[in-house]
Length: 268
Length: 268
Image 1 (cartoon, one colour):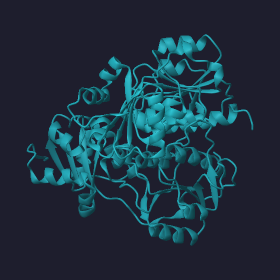
Image 2: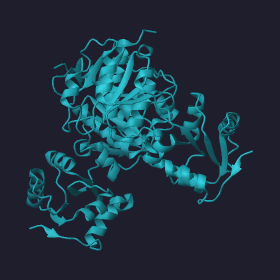
Image 3: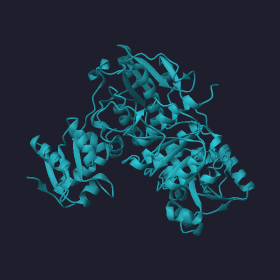
Image 4: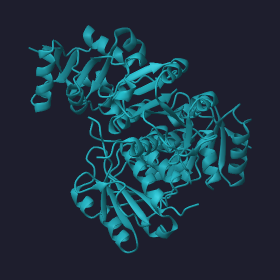
């Protein structure tokens, strides 16, 4: 039977709410996700929450019922609460029907099988959680093997990034690495490193792409450091015809990822 | 000489701050933009603020000096203030060096020259200001003639949308119209309506595109209403190979826009 909690002062609520801070997420190895759609996506990808919170009255939806049953069966704790507490947990005025608390999923480079997919996404010093979530969604859509976060990127397990990923966080392996470690790992096996760059770059449709392609996107404001761009096998740029001078980083990644996909994907 | 204001209670500050609300923006016909980069982009596109606020000490940057001089020369009001007031105006803890208040730029369909560009972006019931700003940036990058907002979309003049547009708000004409008005206007002249849809859609690279192409993207959660999709000349879908089932709306728009651009752009 679900436990009931309706007091903000409850220690479990306080503890879960603290997961909105990166420091606490790291210390606990847990993160928050919200909404039936994202939690169902997670369940379908084989991830059930350690704690599942739902607002009483919201347990009649078939997806909510399925989540509650699966979480209990897997030994997770299910907590009946109210909308105010769900808002408090998710930081949204209008929270979804459920909030789940999951164990962090990050993996490391050594555990990635680069031959498992023709395309991998790599982001360097990405700053915006919305961009990170959006890139995860794109990674899922193009069938990428994973997302590698190089150097100090925004936390992929923030509420904002999880929300923007619309569940792709649960389907796409995420590894974090310093540049030297990433580059060392990359060069120890097959892999074409394709950097989005402005200097010394060719049109994005020009190169001969060779799977596995590692598509590298730099920081939103600064782009790739020159040394990282120089280490790429190919530097590509997307034409910009307008007066402003850049595309959003997640958009540029997606335009490039679909272009690579067209070339490296086995024909149907 | 710039006027100095350092009191939160100053009526002009209160009035400008109220522009963070849509209701006040509509009533005043004014909106806020922040940061040297965006305001400089605006200036280069021929738009100067009616009011320019800068934090004392930030007027030594060459771009700030140029903005101050141009605003004064054009009869705008320049106000020296401090970081706390700039934060209050922009709603950001760490505001840019300048905040500008501009007259709203929205135009209407009758004033768009559809032959001026081979591609136009159209968004229907877009909800997220970040997506709207990102789509404006993409519109700028692909050389779109404008962005047409159909039915009830999020306000393009919100601080969040302006920020996400990185200045493209000032370079791309924006028109708002109800669906029937848009569709009537479209069919009164040349134009291929290409809808991002799931039902009855062909692969996004398959169609013969014919300029001017009007690329129609639907609501983030629901996509296009069936009647709108049915009114399109072509319905296209972007392959999604993953477990999650959708791309971000701004990303899908950009992948599609670059695909169209490749086909309809005169070769260099």
